[in-house]
Amino acid sequence: MTSDLGSGGSAPDFGLVAAGGRKGHDPAPDTAEAGNVPPVNPSVTALRRQFPDGVLRNRVCAGDQDVVHIDSGRVAEILRWLHETPDQHYDHLADVTAVDHGGGRPIEVVYQLWSIPQRSALRVKCELPLDALEIESVTGIWQGANWLEREVYDLFGVHFRGHPDLRRILMPENYAEGHPLRKDFPLRGRFSRAEQTRRALTQDPEDYYMPGEIGERTPQVVASGADDGDEAKASGAGAGGEGEADVL
Image (tube, rainbow, N blue to C red; front, side, top):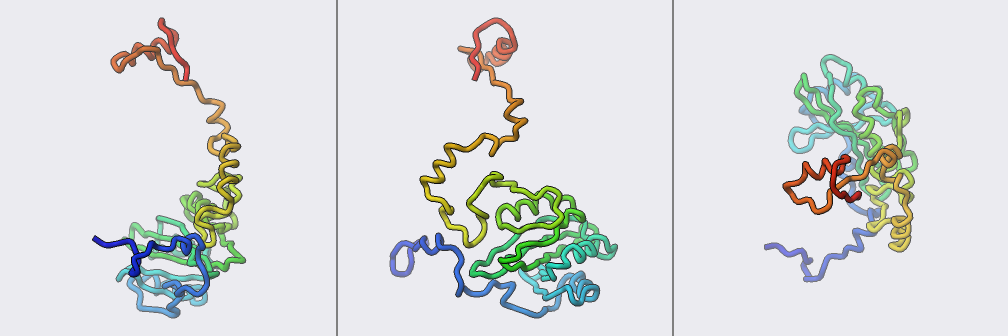
């Protein structure tokens, strides 16, 4: 059995976790190694030939997973080529996510592509500096990018130009503490516990429910004294039959 305590027997310092990412950490694996390596996926070679100035570098991880870093200003152009070129035909956008390595380093926007006809996968990454977190939307290429880009916007603060409905998708629209998956986001949030409690107690139900859901809700009716075997009878009583009913 392994111990969670350090070599000196003391408990781990969770204050370091709460402090978030800091400068001076080891560089992220993807940014530490510039240059190129022989690719496994022939799409990487085709990309370099088609966009010699748009492909910055490539690497292979886990033995056979090709990762290509491209110019963020040409993301829609390059991904559209991968989608529409018959020899590539990356018809499935499996995921759009982001990675914050902390320490003031750029945030990476990650696109996981699959070509079902070619039976190949390709991971494409774009780096965005913290003072310019904006990139073109790819919803015009894959409609499935809609909610995925909204999630990255919500949790990392990346703006997607041309997105048809860019708004929060997990956090309430009036959430004021920032973007929770950023490394600079405090472990316990930006507000004090007292302020978080005050906001929770004074929240508007429309923060969590659509107005239509609130207006169209019908009360649940349960017959008084009904046991498990009287469910049908209870339903009849609630619908206007004989017997007393409680409205929840």
